[in-house]
Image 1: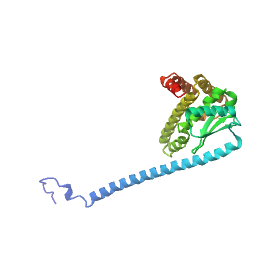
Image 2: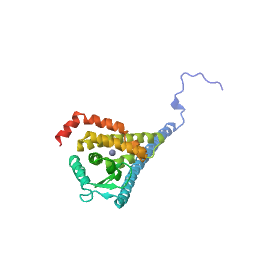
Image 3: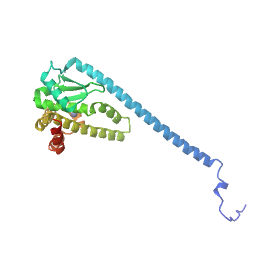
Image 4: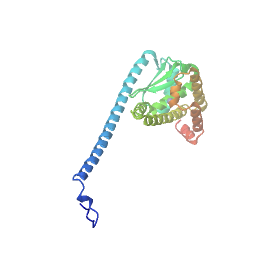
Length: 256
Ligand SMILES: [Zn+2]
């Protein structure tokens, strides 16, 4: 049959299959539902994951504390009077929450703090006490008390958990780098606390320099620590700069 000449084009609505628009609407609606459900699952999963990490950190901490109690010496006025006095002086300057200080028999020049609940724990490895003089030990101890006072001790478990969220490799790398960035900033903050508490920039710097030298020799866990601890040269430069700043002089003289 011949096609009749058209006076004007057909209107699409006159021949569109019934329900095409409805189906499109339903499809778009389903896409939104899937996006919302996936996002909710991701958020819930992430919250669960972080909760799990914190619970794990808490139980690891308890186990660590138990193991430490068995072999380390708690610092008290009786067991280590001079170290106790150093700790009291630093605590008076920094005002951390209650802490327990231990000396652990360990050949690596290291100190650290851990704990989610109070009291937080500061551990000095015995090697530090042999290698460093009293002023240098005071700086290292004050640096750790600074971590406690600044909230790094418990934040570390939480932020570490957040940064460890299962994610695609690229996202994981970005989170890991951000976490290490924050960790390095924490080290600079704790170095400042150590300097403010001890007010001896030369001893602070010699303490940092020795910790680096000895640990490089020992080739101990320092490679791991380097990832979060800024290079010592950088830390020393930052601390020197801070010691020379008007801000430091003002704080050092007003709170003494
Ligand atoms: Zn530190």
